[in-house]
Amino acid sequence: MLGLIFLALEVTGQVEADQARIQRHLEAVETELRARDTSHLPPALQAERARNLDRLHAYRLAGLFPHNPEFIGERVPFFIDEGGVACAVGHLVIDSGFADVAGEIAERENNARLLDMTHPALSGWIAQSGLTAEECARIQPAYCGCGGEYEPVCGVDGNSYGNACYAETCAGVAIAHEGVCKPQESTSDWPDAGTSTGPGDSTGDDSSGGETTGEQPGGSSDSSSDSEGHDGEHQRKSGCSLGQDAVGAPALALLLVLAARRRRARS
Image (cartoon, rainbow, N blue to C red; front, side, top):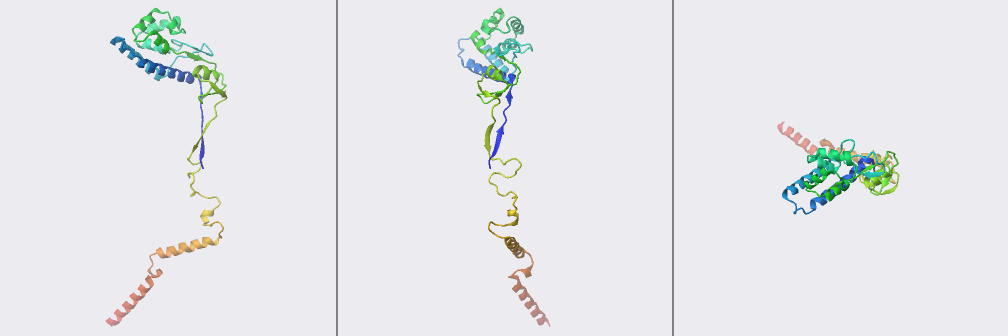
């Protein structure tokens, strides 16, 4: 019998949904920027560009991104959030030695889109980064803000989300239906729980007791005595006693005759 295994689906929260979307975004952008032709750049800018893309790669893998507690139901950029976590571009600015510039941007234009920022030092950093302003704007993600109500929905990606905002605003996934996704059912050849025999294995115990008595369908209880008779015959044949073997009896008689003749010859 094929066992049924139900795969439990976890309900995805706001942080996890936002994190997965941002990591997908940054991975796509990194791949795109690495593939661009930079032969027109001087060697120094090519090297700095490569370092910044390596920084972006490490940032994506770390998976620590700003939170948006202020703009519920929206995706809004945060250059640096209230916990001190920088956005992707902010991280590049800080990691390349311009932490003061990043701090000033956060104070003045924390929620601005990159192409709308007016801080003069940002333009200077971009010029020596090996990246263009358009590429930096392409890197910059926005961060979702949602309420904490638990009203689970199932996304078209097969994942369950804590509420509609987590799915649509954070994960960027359309809703398939309200409520958690139905568990996915799969088949397996593993034995059912509580049994030790696999599918098609008929060697296990039978509650009817038919196998333990040797009773055959349509037969009678005399079959058990027949079985015992065969077992007894097998034991006699396999024993070590010479007198119980049909071939051994004549040999014993011959030995007795020879012994008697020897005694007569001596006398």
